[in-house]
Length: 370
Image 1: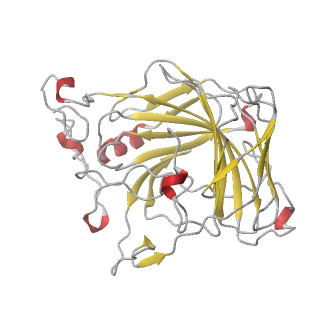
Image 2: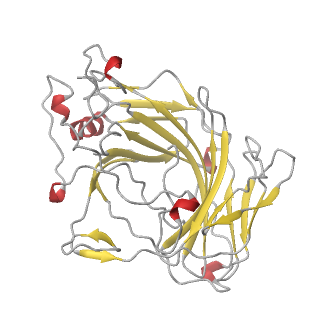
């Protein structure tokens, strides 16, 4: 998925040296092609976006504080209520993400850690609007706010509203415990590059890096703030089952996966995106118990297709656990996740990278054959 951007660029950081993607919208060369031009024979409605903007690339929702003790999450760690140097700020100002990504084809299994904390909630210039919902799933479409005058170095977060970027902070040394390295160690220290925390080059993580029943622990000495600790349940790597999922307008869409030994320890997040190229025009987000199967109702699928379709549609499944704590700056989360993305088939859609991939000899900008 693969991973999505939880660590938007902040003022005063070196984005190039940190290798961290920004939380800005990416626009295609042209607006999304109306679905009626892709699937002949259907009459589709087209989503309208304010200020005439093209749709934006997929942007994940910001993590939210966990109350602790609920299924699929680790309880808040550290001093309850903020305690020793804790902040009364309930905004999520940063996260540490431990990703366990199963390999596919020639791609090897991968384990990674990436973390970043800010002095405030970092703003986004994309607003996701909720539409139809059912069974833990919701159709979301993006809106790009309009500000006049423009915001300059700040971010337009709502029509006529500008907000300054947050600034990345130093949380000191961060030690990871109960995560296995290939040499058999169960703890190591993260390295910091331009306020981004990651696994040092000399440390190689095992795959999988823990047993399902383990608890992952991150300990930060606080740096310019107070020390804090984060804990979250470990998990099993996500594994999809069955054949390539198929999607048709007017029909429900189903996907299956191997459930964990204890489904109460995790949740499953499913992202259905059929408009990757030229800017995401909509998506279906689902969060549900980690039971092993999901069927998205036909009315949600029809609404998603009506928004727009492009080449190489996918469904992404992410098994997820988390824990949070309040720090000097606000709430920080530890997210342990295992993501698996699979291509899907849509009746009437032929994907392409080059003209020779298409019988017609025409490969459109949205990566569909004409």
